[in-house]
Amino acid sequence: MTTPDTQARRRAWAVHLYTASGAVLALLALEAVAQQRYGTAFAWLALAMIIDCTDGTLARRARVKEVLPHFDGSKLDDIVDYLTYVFVPIVIIVRAGLLPDGALGFAAAAAPLLASAYGFCHAAAKTPDHFFTGFPSYWNVMALYLFVLDWSPATNAAVLLAFSAAVRVPIRYLYPSRMTILRLPTYGLGALWGVLVFWLLAQFPHPSPTLARLTLFYPAYYVLVSWWVHWHTPPSPERAAPDATGY
Image (cartoon, rainbow, N blue to C red; front, side, top):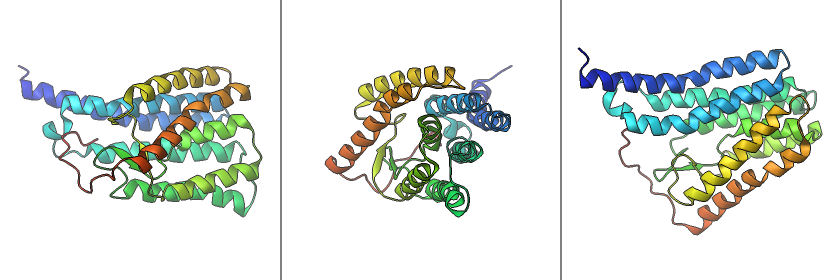
């Protein structure tokens, strides 16, 4: 006979499995990169991003930290995020030949890996009132734009180095799945951006640079609103309230 406690544990483990499935999507993306099917690789990363945007809500509903207190869902989430937001996108950038040869290209590829490794482990990477501190390692989005917009390798290297430095600049950025302000416009514009990005992915291996430039409205909105919020709202509190989810 299944008890309520057993059902709760099953739901909690199912949420953790949902989160962990992002690592499998990272493997599928790497396999696609090895076959030079970059559109497929970006599609797998987009699916991983959808999982990351929804697993926290599921975790809160399932009360995973309360039901499974011995299991650290936050650590699992960070491991998967590093694979799908950082490591695989940089592999795509390197394998697609988007960086210069030699030391500059190597440095530009290594910088996001190191910056985000430190960023993920920083105690204040996420504020108690649900902001990211520093550029939130959206290298998957960065890789897509560098691939489609076809800038020069030197320009791509400069972009990666600049945003790597921005990871350590303590400006607060919106945390879309946990934000409490401007939620409706952010969700609405984000949904529109997602539809356009999937349209862009459907055009591979010949995606439209014009459509890619059109979709830049949302990254621009995200950065500008984040900066406005950072400079025009009170600083975040130093300590977090207890979190029952682990995400």
